[in-house]
Each structure stands twice: as C-alpha cells, then as structure tokens.
Amino acid sequence: MLNWLRPDNLEFPPLERALRDPNGLLAVGGDLSPQRLLAAYRHGCFPWYQDGQPLLWWSPDPRTVLYPDQLHISRSLAKTLRQKPFEVTFDQAFSEVIQGCSEPRDYTDKTWITQPMQRAYHMLHQQGIAHSVEVWQQETLVGGLYGLAMGRLFFGESMFSRTTNASKVGFVTLVQQLIDWGFILIDCQMPTQYLASFGASSIPRTQFAQMLHEHIEDPSRSHWGGLAATSTRSL
Image (cartoon, rainbow, N blue to C red):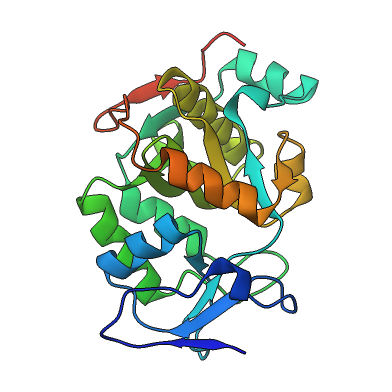
C-alpha cells in the first residue's frame, strides 16, 4: 500500500514499506521544505519526480553507494587528470551548477530537477548543507555536480558535463577531498554504468540504513566555503 504524507507531519513510513515495483517507492506527497528534506535523508529516502507528477519519495533496495577509498580511476581518466585541463572549485556557483544539472539530456527532454526542486536545494545550500562542485575551463563553467553533506556521508544528487571528462574530473576531485575530510560513504542512489566505472556498488537497504544511523550525526572536518582544488592532485 502506498503511503501518503500529511502536510503537518514530517515522519516517513518505515523503509521496509517501500514498494518492490517500482523499486523503492516509499511515499507520496508532503512538500520540499528544508525540514522535510533533511528528515528524508536522515531516514534513508529522497525525492524524485517530474513535472505533472505528485511529489514521490524513494528508498531503493539495494542502494548504490561508493566507498571513497574504493574509488576507481581508469587509465584514460588518470591521463586526463595529469594533463590538468580544468580547474575545480567548491561552492562557488551553486545556482549555475544545479541549473546545468537540470538541462535536457541527449536521451530525454524531461528533468526531475524542477524549479521547486532547485529552490529547495538552494535553501539547503544557504544553510551550509547542500554543496556544489564546479569544473572550469578558461573561466567557463563546463561541468559540475551537487549533493548534501551530513555527518560523514555525502548524498550525491546529479552531475552534468558540457565537455568531455568535465564531470568525471569534478567527481574524482570531490571524492579525493572527501577522503581527506574523513567521509566514509557516498550515496549514489540508483545504479548506472557511469557510477560503476568509478567503483560504485550495491548494498542492502538495511545496511545503508545502519550506516545512516551510525554516521549521519558524526562531527565533520569538512570546510567547503571558498575551497578550490585544481586537478593537479597526485593520484
């Protein structure tokens, strides 16, 4: 049975109530207030819907994650990184990055990063919870990604690239920085070949929920504001 959220209640149903088909659909309704979004991530679910649909909340089983210390860098990408074609910054252009992530892809003209979604995550950015990674080439934004940092966990949301390897360089730079800060897990939500190429894998939802419980309130060593990291880091 599908669970409908009441506007006056931030509590989500237990994760085991999520549907098997479609995989992980947990609840419908509610809103995109910062309070509800934070409650969702702490609970182990996230919003994902398109214009014309009700607000849908998901917790797939299994869950796709990347352990930062298991990051895989292909030989071709390592070569690109050594050539230093980009500059990578953090939290310098959040609005531009989320707008870039919302742009149509080759395979569809639809987006789940609706205007309400963009406004909601921008509010979380203003609170220091949502963060962006920007990839620049000659002062032009050519790629990036955004997500949430809570405790020692990073919840990846979306990425985009306007030139070859831009988002890959941004992602690798982010993961290396998260390792320095002591992050233990990156939530990738759904499996893709792109994420698998970096070493992402699937774990049971129960294991993911346990890691949330243990680490989402951990003190963090991260400091995002004004941080710039060029792609010159040794691999």
